[in-house]
Image 1 (tube, rainbow, N blue to C red):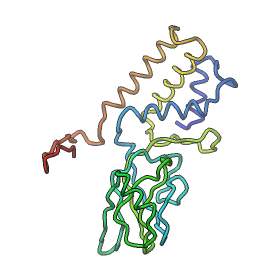
Image 2: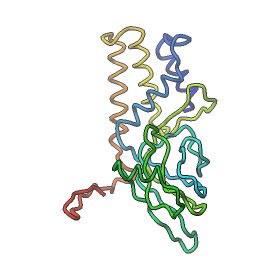
Image 3: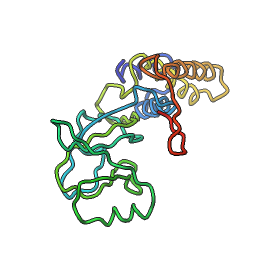
Image 4: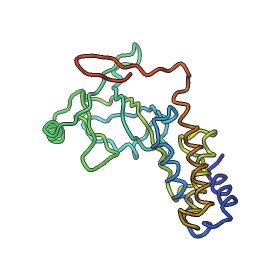
Amino acid sequence: MLRSEIIELSNQLTERKAENVLDLNSLFRFVVQDIAKRQRFWWRRIAFSFQLSPDVPTYDLTQITTTPALTEIAIEEITKFTLILSPSPLQKAELAPIFDPETYIEMVQANQTIQPARYTMLAGDWKTILIDPPDNPYNAYIVGWGMPNPGSDTVEDTVPLIPDYGHNAVVSGMNAKIFKFAYGSKNEKTIDAQNEYELAVQDLMQKKQFDPNYRLQMNLQEGAIRST
């Protein structure tokens, strides 16, 4: 379904109680984000590339040109940040994430260009990456988890990330919010709509991966346990 179709269907199912009263585009955004936050759904995984510029250490992921384009998608978490040193034969270098304050200060103060080997997020800015100033125009590749982030005033009519078979959950979620606004949380219509929404989300959560053969493994390595 398209976004406009979801909003119209929700309007029909809720007696148009919210039409011209609530900002339904904002309500749509809140519901798709609530669904996505419930689990690391496999369809939330994203991968994209972009160009590093020499001597430029910061990159706003909502502003840079990426391939493919991140249309109405925010980066919730980075799981792999790699520089492509040579496309053929493929040579690459993985950047290490930095968390400690002293190294962060060192990176902020860096003024010598090098091949970047580390990255972090700019303090106070959830969407901007900080790296050491690159010495060359490297092609960078990021794999991570995306979050739907549609704008309230956008003309885009597609639903970011959530697949077609999950759009019923978006409709149900909007219905629950609208009925709660119109009748209160204790109303029978609100309770029924909220239950329907939770069941729709639970149904999505049953499909943890795109292949049923996926198994979560726990590896013991260097005294620490990690999931793979």
